[in-house]
Image 1: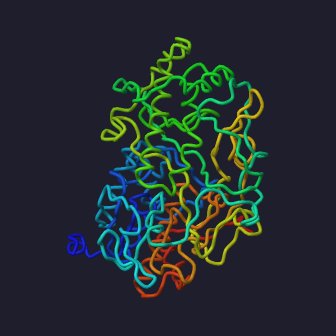
Image 2: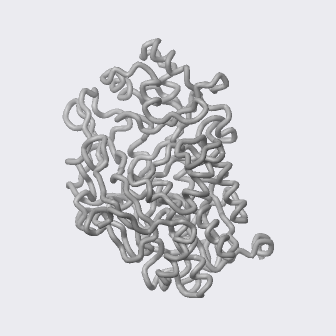
Image 3: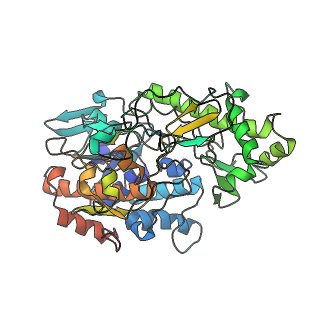
Amino acid sequence: MNAVDTVDNPDVVIYGATLAGIMAALRLRMRGYRSVILEPTGHVGGIVAGGLVKSDCPNVIEALAGLTLTRFFEGIGRAYGLDGAAYRFEPKVAEQVSHDLIAEAQATVRLNERLHGASDVDVVGGRIQAVRGIRARFFIDASYEGDLMAAAGVPYAYGREGHDKYGEPLAGFQPVQAYRRRSFRPGNLYPVKPVPPQRAGEADEKTQAYNFRGVLSTGPDRLPFPKPEGYDPRLYAYLGQLLEQRGVKGLSDIVTHTALLPNGKYQTNQALFIGFDLPGASWDYPDGSWARRDEVIAEHVRWHQGMLHWLANDPSLPESFRADTQTFGLPADEFTDSPHGAGFPHALYIREARRLLGAHVLTQHDLLKPGNTKATPVCCWKYGMDSHIVQYYAEGDDTIVGEGTLSGTESNPPVDLYQIPAEVLFPAHGGVENIAVPLCFSASHIGYTSPRMEPNYGMLGEAAGELAAQSLGTGRAVQDYDYPQLAAALREHGSVLTLPGLE
C-alpha cells in the first residue's frame, strides 16, 4: 500500500492545486473529509500564483462570493493590510495565501505528480478506485488539462465545435468576426500560418492562444531580460512594424496600460495585435503528451523572453525606445525557482484545454437570455465572451488576419448575467460516478469563453467539493445528488446562487 494511503487515508484525491482544487479541499475539510492533492507542477496556486495577478472579475461583482471571495481574495487583501478583497497582487502573495488555505484544509500536497494516461488511474464498475496508487472514494479533476478525467475514460472535447453542433452563431472558424490589421510586409513570416481550408462555421481542433502572464519590475534590484536559447530577432519583424504604426515609444507605453501591481511591478498580457500571445502554438497542448506539452511550453518561453530581450536591445529600435524598456526588468523576488529562469513565470497560462462532455454542456445559449437561468445553479457569472486569437493568416498583400476573436474588434461580445448549473461539473448518467470537474467543466468552446476565469473556477471548485461531500455522505453517485441539500451547503459559506437582473 502506498505510504500516503497509510498516513493520510484520504476521502478524496484532487488532481490540481489550482484555485479550484484548493477551494474544493477547503469545502471538504469543513464537512469533515480529508484530501490529498496531486499537483502536476512544482507550485501550488495555479496560474494566480504563476503570473495571472490581475484578476478577471465578473461584471456584476456581487457574483463573486463564497470562500473564493472571503478566504482567497480577501486573504490577499489581508496580506496587504487591506480591509476587503484585493484583485491585483504579487504572485508570491497569491502562492503564500494558497499555502495557507491548503494548511487550513489540512490537505496533503504532492508536487510534480503528472498523470500520463489510463495506466495511472484504476476504474472498476464505473467508479475510480485509485490514482497513482492512492485510493479514495471520490476524485476531483481541478487541473488545467483535464488529465484525470481523460485517463478515467470520461468523455471530453477540445478545439472548436462547428456551428451545427449546438446551433451557436459564433461557433467554429470565424473569418467574418476576425480582427484584421493592415500595412504588414511580407505576409508570411512567423507566426503567420497558411489560410485555413475550412468554411465559416466549421469545426477544428485548434484552441485560442496561450501566453505567459509576466510580471515586470522597475525596482533597483530588477533582473535584466535574458536572451533565450535559440533567440532570433527576425521573429519580431511584425512587432517592429506594429510599434512603428502605432507610434509606441517604449515598453512603458505597453505594460503600464495593462496593470499596475503593488510594489512597483506590472502585469503583462497580450497588449498588442502582435504581442505576448502566440497564436497557433497552443493547438497540440490540450490532448498532447507531457513530452509534447513541454515543447509547447518551451516555444512560448522562447517567444516571450526573446520579445523582451528584443525590445530592450535590438538596434532596429530607437535608442530612446530601448532605454525606456531597460527601465524594466524581471522581479528578483518573484519566481525565484522557476524552471525558465529567475524572475520568469513558472506557469504557462492555459486559457482552455480539454472540456468535459457532462450532464449539461454550457453553450452560447446559456450565456444569454432567456437561457441564462437554471433550476440547479451553483454560482452566477457575467463576463464577455473572451476568446483570444486562434491563428494568424495573411489576406492579400499587406493584411494579417487574427482569427478566433468573436467580435472583429478588441472588445468581447457581451453576455447577460447567468447561472451555471451543477450538471456541468460531472459526467452524464451512466458515466463515471465519483468524479467532479470544476475547471475543465462541461462546455462548448463558445460556452467556455465567458466563465473561464479564475474567480469562477474557484467557485466551481467549491461546488465540486460540496458535491463530493454529499456523495461521500450518502454513498450515491454524483449524478444522483440532492440539489436542495447542495444549495443549502453552498449558501452556508457564502455562495450566491441567484441575483437581481437574471430575469
